Amino acid sequence: MKEIYFNAGKDMLLIEDLTTGEVIRMDQMTRSFIVNNDRKIQSMYPEQHAELSKLIGCDCCEYGRVYQFFACNFSSQDGQPDIDDDGNFIFERVSCPIRHNCKRTTCSPRVLGKLSARELQVVTLFVKGFSEEEIGERLFISKATAHNHVTHIYQKLNLTGGNPDRQLITYAFKNKLC
Image (cartoon, rainbow, N blue to C red):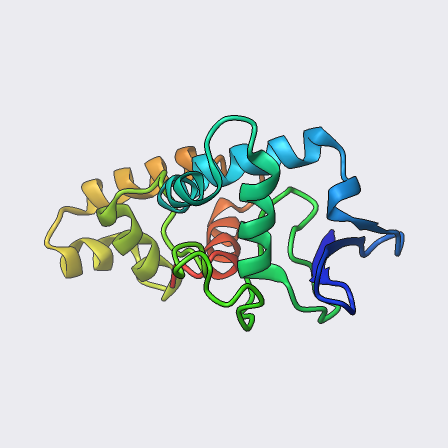
């Protein structure tokens, strides 16, 4: 688990491994860490990635995009993880350290590009404890269609193994989908 925050001078992001206590400046992180996070932002938050690409640049600008995304979403030191052991982002509300340079396009992204608008509605109701039948009634779809949406959501978010319902609820709260 990693926490991301600004140093005392507010001129560099630090990445702390909360398990070991090791702190590394973001500009000293491995290229694979930067590229993997850029790809994650691109796949999970395509709208924000597109805006970052316009602001920062497209080719070989992974570091700038990741830095900007992290600064907008994780830059306060609170002792809580910002990236969990599975690499999922855990967003937090932060004051804008870059004076809204990004025009707020990357602040607190909510919508995962992988999920359709209808699937997001299903997730919201599911997290509130509604059954598939109740979800169907509220969205004017059949129980079978509601079930298919839930199944597709599990597949798209790669929620496998024991208790995918709990994984979906945890995922929804971590990513502010509800």
